[in-house]
Length: 298
Image 1 (cartoon, rainbow, N blue to C red):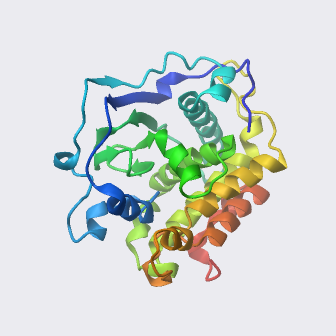
Image 2 (tube, rainbow, N blue to C red):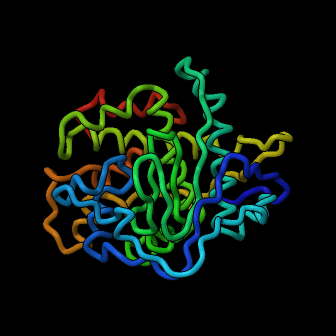
């Protein structure tokens, strides 16, 4: 999904988080798998590792000087089309422009903006340490989204997403779906029940659906000067988003890790479910299509 090259990006909605020189050490592939099982869900990885958080600050070692992600290069839609960091900025602008108008109109609630922290290596959040291996997440304690753009390469190289623009934009929109849930008082329902029909899965599938709702309207979102941010979606764009949704399905992650596919341990839903709920939002174009707590057919 391409940006209008003349659109202006608003970097005030995004914070350049820490860049740590050298490789991040600690956790290893086992920790990576644990984290990907918990991908996109606001839980402490320690809950899946017997109380030991594989990404605790004490286990993160870095070399070199700290700096921050440079956002000064992100000025226009043309920058968003060529650079992953700038694409995150543009997507944040578009998603927040949509929900600022849609949330009051759809459910009578005022939308409040949430900043995204773009980092590389590791940085601190109010929910603990965010590292390059934890994947993108929404922290309700500070109402911020944390994204290491290196995750996009992992999503395609290890888990099979196609690396297209809407695959990346879907990730951002999904996290802002959690922010919408926070505003609506729904996010806490992730703690109700467990497994394939539990609250965690329902919250995640709802966020996928809300990402689809944004995608339906993305080509109508505008920058501060009224210039359309994004061009209309193509069928190829939609396939790209679906490839990302499939890549982060619980069944796909478990199979990729060589583990037994066990619905009783799911926290996000299967690849098929994540794709289907994204399409429910995309085809329906309204948050009304996203009430995953009102159905037994997930």
